[in-house]
Length: 165
Image (spheres, rainbow, N blue to C red):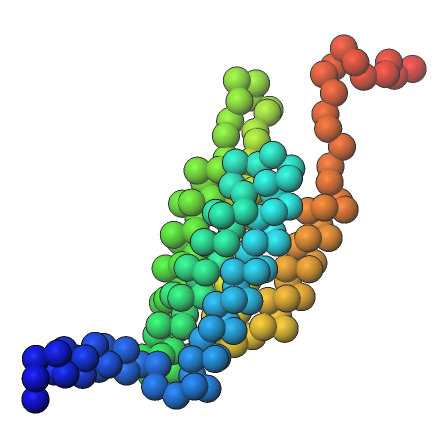
């Protein structure tokens, strides 16, 4: 056997985890669902001028999906994924903390909604990665309603507020 044939066989062995067309399709669908839903949430945050936008949310969702897809592909039982989920949740907590900014005014804290949306986007990605696409879609839709429709009114400085009688 020639060296290039041996090399090609070695490459095929490296990608053996994607053997059947059904497996490839399942993985691609789960990853695409995670990316699309993360993108929808990120687009809303970016349109609101938040620090974490489209790409960040897409990457968080895709990464979270991968963190559960990989152990499932390796044969880990769904019941044993709790440690993986704890690690993802803790890591996303650090990422979300970076989105929170305290302003000079002690009562002016910004980025809490963005941090919460990053955290929720990770959960959406986890749901998609575990094959719970309906749960992921419903969660993302609920989040979009909360983010887009229930937008809090902007605070006005004290001097612009109407006088109370």
